[in-house]
Image (cartoon, rainbow, N blue to C red; front, side):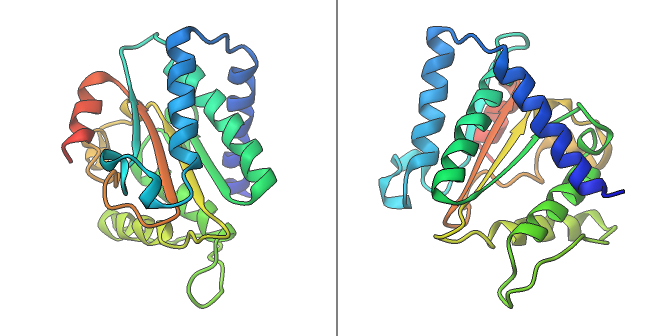
Length: 201
């Protein structure tokens, strides 16, 4: 069994199912277009000043359709990357055991990104065996730097408020939302209070 591959497929299937039943309201369509603009910028100079090197945060109360918006955005980004190149990584937090606590989440993300994007020596990383949480956070940040002009990296993390409290996962200090490396984009959805917290990290 391949735990990383199984995890990837579970979340892609989830995104596909949700996107198929997505009927956008005017406000939802507006958010989808804003995400598409954020992801389509070719370089930092094209981004709005408040978006340079920053994540895109979708926040709203429960039940307003954030997950449907994220699912549609994943579908749109995947189609674009298939045509132009790039990597899309997606997790709908709380829908699988490995997306329910931050340690397992980061290990899974590093495992996936490490396989797809080689390091500076041109080598892929099959999986990380790190157990210390601080080391794992540093590993994740390092993985973000593997993106390049030919292979940009887009990460979707839906419902980060669904993480449990282990390793202070819900405090979101592990999640880089500013000073992102070039060619790396992160789209996050969460509840309003967490959205405000991410704005000021």
